[in-house]
Length: 205
Image (cartoon, rainbow, N blue to C red; front, side, top):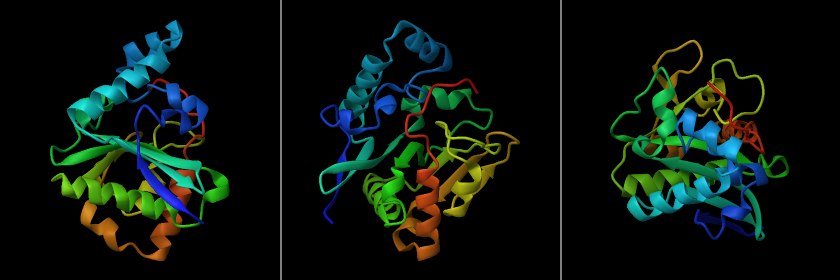
């Protein structure tokens, strides 16, 4: 089984699940995001966001391929590039951290260690760039797939709560800890990434 983890660019954006290619939940603030959806401009807005982040900051995601079939992805960036993050009651993300925006592995490929490989690849990338941690806003009342990752699953893969909230706690994962994950964490990570909606829709907080 050939595995490849490729930086996300405009050239491989089409390899994300169809709805994810135009989802701007994280990339725009709530008002602009709703307007983009209503006006049918979310796809070009997504492309513009990726292009701007690539030019200004560098790689902001990874696409996972198995035998040249796209089977998952992860998206991340410093919070300054993630307008939606300021809408959360537990913001801001710590200055030494990058925000994990969203991630996904298709069901047929879960349980094969791809989640671990994906996040470890991101960890190595961010450590090399001088960051110490990944932070994410969790959904403490998660019931169905959405753009915000379930808080319980984030905790299961090693994230720790840094700011409590009944709905959207902010959680943190020290990057160095990801480089020596055990099998049980790997399984939990696959469950976490598999819980993300294949075609996430923009929804209000």
